[in-house]
Image (tube, rainbow over all chains, first blue to last red; front, side):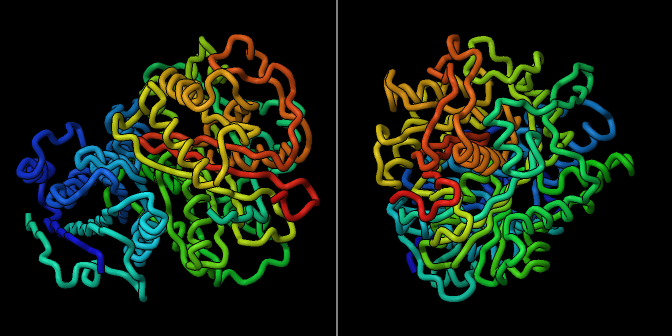
Length: 185
Length: 375
């Protein structure tokens, strides 16, 4: 299995965005400003792998939900208060905003895809990444799945070369035999 | 890349309630009637290109669209991947819920994959996922769907793409000052003042064979992230240029072989400048015929990769493409007269979006009633 690194971040529903920002400061010198919870979570899972990521790397990101606080703020502003949304909240609500910030912070120049995370999220991400790896468009692929249903868990694996797909993929199989970098918040 | 056919297609948009009606309106130069909405706080009107109101729920409309696309004698879909490419998804329903209960609770949030999951269960697709890369969503759906077929993962793929009228999108683009105050949608005009949003529902079946109603072959494409800005691409056009070149390379053709470039052309200051610079890097001053679709459909955001491609390919089967009435003033050499092109012309189609996503795809149309396409 050409997975060369993996990380997993877990936190409580009560873990504040401020705590996430503080934790991110350990990894990134200049984290982006005015970002939401999904972007923070994605960056927290990707940043520990930064030293191993090369520019010829694609990003394949899945999340079950958008950042709920951002969506809530937009819906309240537009549909209840009949105001214009704050521009930074609107652009953060674009689902691939998290992918953009991860690619920017890690210096990744490859494709950048975002999918809704269903039960087969890892299998779909791996299939998409394998296309780009096998066609030689990229040398590495960073796969990342964010799940926040109550407490949250974000898992990431870094591939160097296409991975064989036998049956459903998941984080445990992809990261088997590796020392996973774990952070509990 | 091994070519993959766009076998059957359906479109509901402001220009018409089916693909043929919409393509005829484009080909004859008949614009859609625009509706409007008010920008909150500023209380200024903005035009919007709505599709026909049908009274259907989103689920009902998507089912009807899929039925139109697959036809009366559709096979079982257990060999077919479903890719839902949209930025709006069920946001209009969440907006209505928030307005009715005067608030939004995190528990009201729905999964980003819920529509794809429901459609998979209802229609029996082999697998399904939601793809959301802003305004390149549908272009990426086409490109990755075709490549998954070529990789042998699925026999067929259905790309379903739509953008519903969303108050958040209307007010959000308004807050970014990207919607046109004049209501004139004029990409590449020196006095362009922004975009008009549009509603569209589009669907296409991809497969390795032409099928009974082939519209085009997807020959290649490329998608990558420009990390210079979340909302704009590099003004010098260098990233767009690189993406177009990579797309042509994957299709095995040169820029000079392309007969028609479908521009992204949002009519925003920065995007049009970047795209015109990218086009000049690729072509210098000698460009193929250039096409703009957003003035006809509105900017259909995540659906534009499919709504614009289908409309253009169908219009090519019907006859000349319409002229642009401000061609003499435009930043790029747009067509001052109707352009007659063969239905099987080679097309390069550009789609760029928030999140740094830039994508180009290469297509070759099929002549109506003729199959397979020129090889």
